[in-house]
Image 1: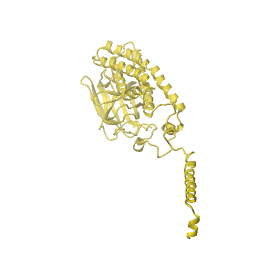
Image 2 (image 1 turned 90 degrees about the vertical axis):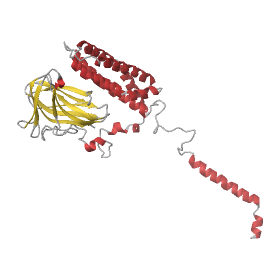
Image 3 (image 1 turned 180 degrees about the vertical axis):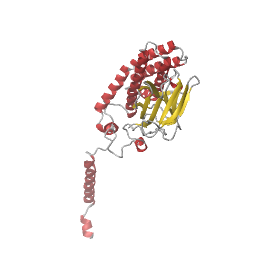
Image 4 (image 1 turned 135 degrees about the horizontal axis):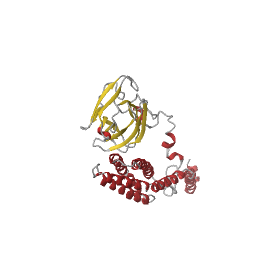
Length: 371
């Protein structure tokens, strides 16, 4: 043993240790070279962040998409105003229904526009939108201070609002162009909600409303969705017929010829009114959520051809959406969709029956979220 120790000199031991250390260093360094370990000199790959030509954050992209959506709704409101203004005698009360919706839309988008202003890539567009929305809202608020009897003021406000809404078209095009450039450079995995939503194939699809409400297809007339006693089978409650003092009308549950089920609501009008909401069948405490799309659907007929208005309003009277729809003498299903811009746990669904004395039958009223 002592002889072996004598033959192993310190120099040999040092040499062996040096070889071992080099081998360990090589063994650690070689496999680490190709591995995509993030370091100070590396940037994340395109699968986790947009490429330099994209440069849009999720918040900015969402804000641009909201601008396109809201501007589309404003364009729809502009078309409604144009239809009324095309009449020989534009009606101030009808213009007054549309104008608050425009203000609500321009106000609801304020936070998204702020996001655009804060980002250098969209700051110019954001600033132009601030000016456009602000001018439009200020004009309408000024007009709404006038009495609805001031026909000239409301007619002029309607005309100016239409002109300002048309000026939003190039701003919408700019937002769409930025989004198109973003989509061309983004990886397909960056927007799964767009590619997966139409398929509806997975039970695990994140659709919280579809678990407790009707599916995205239009509900049948017998399904009320968020509406209680949709077919009037349980009597009139919780429906209420509101009638202004100048008018006279009565609500009756009629089982003679229902549109669906065994009963319908019949509203007999003995004294009419020029105010659409002067005679109105309403249900309150209807919950809606901001960002959710809804479909309104009902069956209706009348003693004589006429029209009615369906609206969703806040308890303070602000109108979220309103549609004037034709009614014939046979049972017909009418419907429309809209996007809610605010959260309201106690909205009011109103079926306005002014402007005609013709008796109306209503059945199968439904308000349900879509996909």
